[in-house]
Length: 298
Image (cartoon, rainbow, N blue to C red; front, side):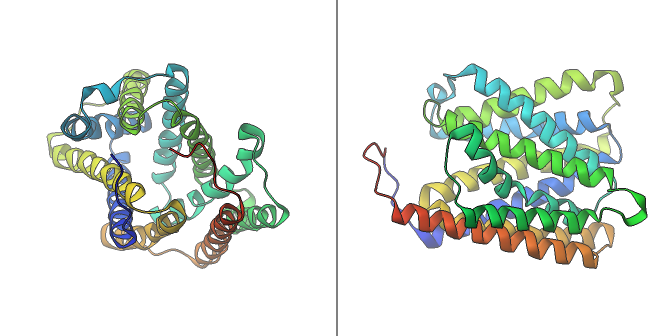
């Protein structure tokens, strides 16, 4: 069944999704002070999975969960463990706003990786935008300050790279598998893999964290539902730039929970990265308008 497009509602759902995901990340940062990195990664997947399963079974039914391309699902689960594990590790010492700023390089990496992995063509102007965005990352990382680039900053960059590769696998999976199966199996494999690897450093869960863990899971699931609705109701070129509003939310969480604000380097580097990403999205929209409509569009 086709869903009628509604740009206004799509914007609302995307803003809601970004807010939910930022709240989930704030929960992960809070938990990272009490549990090992892989245990927090396990909790991220396990806490959201029940909520997502209820949504999928109530809307699309159990048949939508049947995977077709197991290999890509397993690869995506492995990339997810790398992505979230590195991000959680970085959150132990970085403000959320700094981590988000570096992570925003992911769209630039996706564009760059689409050339070798998907055979897509990236024009010179988009390559320049990618290069400028990477300069923004260097501004945030500040190589040479205090002798070395920060290890947590590099871990966020590794997380963004894993996310970019995972996004490429999503573009492949959408040809054969349902969005519901991709979300559920991603969370299930994330929880299973991270949970097994976390056993050696496992720490007993504290009852005082039950509400925080449940809230993190609910926020992640709600963000996924809202994100799905946003892409159903609006064009990607309209709603994708709204992901950058996450920086506003995490600055608020940094001030509210930890009493910190981004430093000048983060503001400057963030502005460069966001501007490059927005230009890249603009060029992608221009390219699609100029290209002939595909005959096999679903």
